Length: 201
Ligand code: IMP
Image: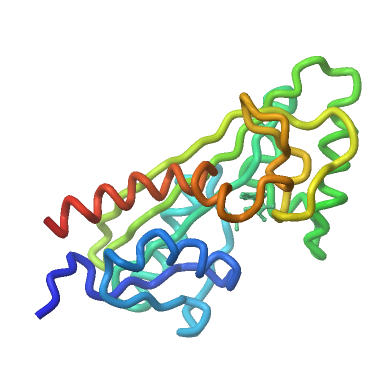
């Protein structure tokens, strides 16, 4: 008999790209992983005004609909001189066609004449149970918005315009394997993995 604390986990995302990335960290710690998109579960509108609020909303909606334990993530980039924007609106800044080249340009334009180019990526994970209980895990990476053209084609979204503190490469230049070790998502995952290991004994 298996001794996993979570025998079946639903990833509450309809973004197929996130599934292997999240599964990579936790597949050895849960019995079976399924995806909300494949199960036809509803995807709620992100109506909350924090990363945690939206992650909890997505996880709880899927847990209510499926009767299973569900995991959701909400992430984005926050630019200090723009009062934290785009933040929770990060995916929407690319417009309906999710054009992140344009979204990056918009950040660059709004930073013209501003000295402070500091920014950070945030990720909040929410684990939700069908009875309403939930736990959240956060990860953050500090850095800045590149002063110049976007660089690198190895990542996605805002990767080509973000440079982590103490580095000279953008996230678009560092490559998948290294990013999996150091990103905001990796840091949030560290908390989740530690929690699962503790529960699994
Ligand atoms: P959501 O969490 O699916 O609502 O969307 C997060 C959005 O933030 C994505 O569409 C990306 O534009 C951006 N984002 C989140 N994490 C990253 C990252 O690691 N690199 C680049 N962009 C990211």
